[in-house]
Image (cartoon, rainbow, N blue to C red; front, top):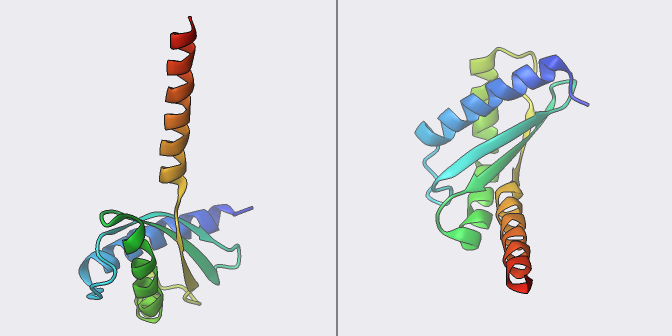
Length: 120
């Protein structure tokens, strides 16, 4: 369970990481990624950053994750300087599949609805 401070710091990390990826990281593997959410441990030492890669589909996502993992040290240093935290959190980048799952569920529900209308 995240505390209020961890949630606030997570929101700040989300903003700063998004800004840094957009403006400072020059790795071509990353391409266009969106930071969807950030989960920070209560002691603020670890941050799990969930990303969604737009464009390129399934083949771009692993490359973007590798690029972000290689830039994690740079991003951690910049976060430490910009957020003035005692400890810069260790960054772990993970894929966010919630959008694909939501689209899949919507498609399944649409199929069920069309099957019901056909049966009537």
